Amino acid sequence: MQLLRGALIVDGVLTPAWTGDLLFDASGILEIGPDLSGRVGTHVPRRDCQGLALAPGFIDVHTHDDAALLLDPAMRPKLSQGVTTVVVGNCGISLVPLRLAPDQALPPPLNLLPAEAYRYARFADYRAALEAAQPAVNVLALVGHTALRAACMPELDRPAQPKELAAMCALLDQALAEGAGGLSSGTFYAPAAAAPSEELLALARVAARHSGRIYATHLRDEMAGVLAAIKEAADTAHQAGLPLQISHHKCAGHRQWGRAIETLALIERLALRQDLGLDVYPYLAGSTVLREDLVDGHTPIRLTWSEPHPERSGQWLAEVASEWGVTEVEACRRLQPGGACYFQMCEDDVDRILAHPLAMIGSDGLPHDRQPHPRLWGAFPRVLAHYSRERGLLSLERAVHKMSGQSAQRFGLLHERGQLRPGAAADLLLFDPAAVQDVADYGEPCRPARGIEAVWVNGRLALEGGAGLARAGRVLSPRAGAGAGSC
Image (cartoon, rainbow, N blue to C red):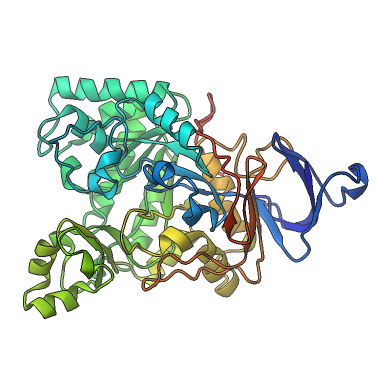
């Protein structure tokens, strides 16, 4: 048991911040009040939190930490931001249910996760591996449509045949019964692009049979066809009766700049008929695998990794092309397989999306990149520092809400995560609101944030002074009967 005294309480559900005490132990939050010092014995450890803010541990709703949880369970890139729960299996990319054969190729974007980690044919096996690894953060896992396709189809450049689709549905049904949190898709990428809406609808209907599950999608098109792609995803989820999460919403490419006005208006209209939300990362650059079709001569592209040319990580594609005396497209071709940061968005669009009431925060960090996007280490402190304290785009309460209570509500976890109240899990973040700052950048992307004082996961001190301590994360499932809803 421990008493935190005199903190600025930011409870994750938009209550105006107030100064008070919080008492907790490993079972959860026991009591919150203006002054609890006289209600507990002198034997209870007390921590003076004057000048510091106390919030629920943040929930990163869009990650690719599926393998990192096993290979690096200390999870410092997330703990050092105040993140206590991660949602994995996004963009159609999940370790389950794909068990790679020795000679089986791993097409992009499945290669954003290490090939050796694809060895879990059943969600129960992956869950057991997570529990054995004991990661420092909690995890909710989605099942990826692309992984289902790769597990059931010999060729991915066509729609699934009826028997293949039936096999995919059976694998998804089993994974959801064993505790997976929902379905994700990524028809933006070649291995899933040939899948028609009917294939996705069949899988979404399977997910809808399991209470509290969600459909998260990397849209088929985030550029010129973004409105049609939003409508397709919304129709799929609506027909299935499943909540929809639009992943890392953006208007990508300079010809689309300013179109967030249109996309958000469409999303608002769709939200009147169905359960719909979205997430966003607080940067102007995205990051994914190297793709020739994204090399447009206008977008600055910074390499994050290259299998044939690892020495080029961190360099600009234009500089590599100039040095080699070739076009950027040809340089991209020579560098593959690889990854890059694409500076595709404009600030006005990111501002509009991030401030929207339906939007929450997901880092979309790629932990296995050689020179990763700084969002892997800095996304959540950046919201607090740049968008809340410095620019005033969000109040402190709204910023915390978008990273905790709203996210927990969306993914069926609000009964125990994402808020400060008696009975909730003791996932806690203590930070200095005047000093919190992301310091990771594109040149040095793996630097931990400043101003994160301490993090507790399930009541155990997981990080203090930048040093990792207890690893007390749990594998989570949506609560039976919980709806995603909005908060």
